[in-house]
Image (tube, rainbow, N blue to C red):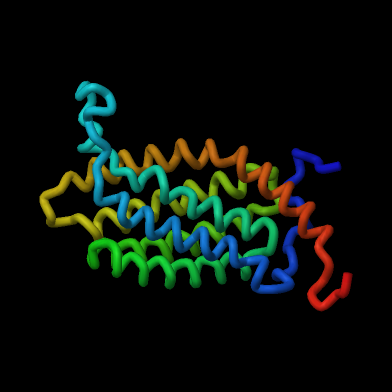
Length: 210
């Protein structure tokens, strides 16, 4: 039985994954999230969504709703496989995301995203690891909040400062959206981590013949 009041599903410091195949879903998901976010951040949310009552285009871009998924990916990896595996996912996802973003997105946005992503994600991974022995929701929530605030400050200043675009209000709206999504992501984090932990427990070790 899993005690919802305890911090982790596994031991405080889970062993590294037994094979690269365990990390591939996280790596692919990370690269996809970075790519989609770097494209989506170039498109402000239309005021028409609220009938023009609120100037949403001055406060939000669509990237605010996709990028927080990156923290869900690293938090799940950290919980299931440990801090070293989470960092590995960040590095590989960073490289894939930047390369794809250079191809499909603006070069300045790709550079700003890469810088902000790497620094913020590594901060989030470290904070999560420090808090992993606390009540289960504290590590993913606090690490996501810290990483999101740092990521937003770095990304919007590097990507849009001096362009004449409303990047300060975009950044404020981005932080607000990320904080809300970080709270909403706790439920899928818990469900996926419990389900995946059960699957990993049942999986045979590498080279084991069924």
